[in-house]
Amino acid sequence: MTNPKHTLTDLALFGGEPAFDEMLHVGRPNIGDRDKLIARLNAILDRRWLTNNGPVVQEFEARLAEFLGVKHVVTVVNATIGLELVIRALGLQGEVIVPAFTFVATAHALQWQEITPVFSDIDPATHNLDPARIERMITPRTTGVIGVHVWGRPCDIEALEAIARKHNLALLFDAAHAFGVSHRGRMIGRFGQAEVFSFHATKFFNAFEGGAIATNDDALAEKLRLMRNFGFAGMDNVIYIGTNGKMHEFTAAAGLTALDSLDAFIAINRRNYEAYRAHLADIPGVDMIAYDDQERNNYQYIVLEIDAEVTGIHRDLLMRLLHAERVRARRYFYPGVHRMEPYRSLYPHAGLLLPETERLVDRVLSLPTGTAVDEGAIERIAGLIRFAVAHGHDITRAMENER
Ligand code: T4K
View 1 (spheres, helix red, strand yellow):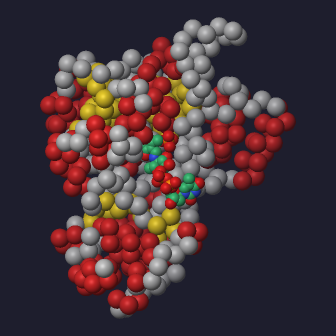
View 2 (cartoon, helix red, strand yellow; view 1 turned 180 degrees about the vertical axis):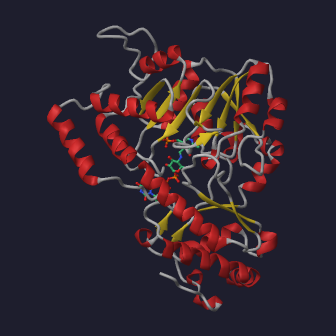
View 3 (cartoon, rainbow, N blue to C red; view 1 turned 135 degrees about the horizontal axis):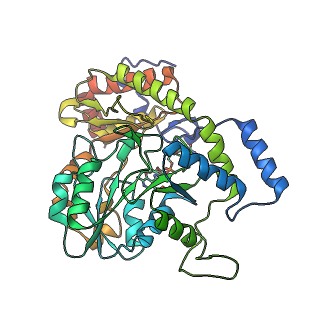
């Protein structure tokens, strides 16, 4: 698997981009035990109960609640709908504070309901909302804060709780990245009014698509259950405005099967994380984010910060080089939600208050991990990065001459 590069002309960069299927991808799904999954799917087909709060969904919710140590888990079709439901169930309106360094779904879940996402800057050390900057974003129209546990590293939850309490704001967490993660010894899922997980295919723990809302609030859970099912409180009895956010039985079967393999997935992610750390150590200008080993982590993202001043090669060129070498690295969350529509047009000056976000979106690079990646691949990827940095200025110059 190792493929050392000796000279610049050895680089595939000067050829073309390889076929998609030949590449190592960020977000390659982990697949659990196929026999178990197929047995579960067959049982569903035999039962002929396919959706609408079926027994597999109920089993999945019960196992998730037990695992997270939370009173209620309400499964949903995906995390985006989960966020929308919680935002609506809590009666948020006006303005809600969110980071711009997140997947666009966090902001869309607000804007979709005509609530203004107010982007607040991040702490460059954690990539999460910087509590010290939030208070200046609060106005009389602010009704809540949504923290995002970016890369599965928990927000500064206590500081956010204190701000929410002081200003009487709702506090939710987009925990799309943070399944299986603890904060001060307690599982993510137990904080704020509610936390929302994603089980999308690209997450280390996936149910193809899917999501779940975790909450200890009985009334909120009750409302969410009504809202995900059109507001039905029994046959012919609609008591609330709702939508169709129900998870179906196949999804829950995939989720249960993934849950059976959770420890194995995390062990592989951890092995990969440690291998990357070892192979990428001491490359000047390349910093890999670290997880707190005192806590439970899912280690699902391998994220680098590339300092082009030091490496001589910009993150974007490094990404192109890796793509050409069959490594489909991603620059999540480029260019920042505030630079995507409709936010770019609605709030053209948002970037002025987001200096750290603007700096970070230009530096981050996410590398492939998970069960599709082995140590040989990691050695090869790290070797490519080491070579690119060693020849950063030359590669940059050669590419400029190509233009
Ligand atoms: N909040 C946060 C912080 C999130 O990160 C997300 C989702 C959400 C909320 C919303 O959760 P959901 O509503 O999705 O449950 C992907 C995912 O689509 C998205 O779920 C995820 N975050 C985001 C970080 O990543 P893209 O645009 O990168 O997807 P795509 O299609 O480019 O796939 C990425 C790579 O994964 C591909 O290069 C190949 C690989 N892949 C993907 C799929 C779907 C596979 O190998 N097999 C597959 O089946 O957004």
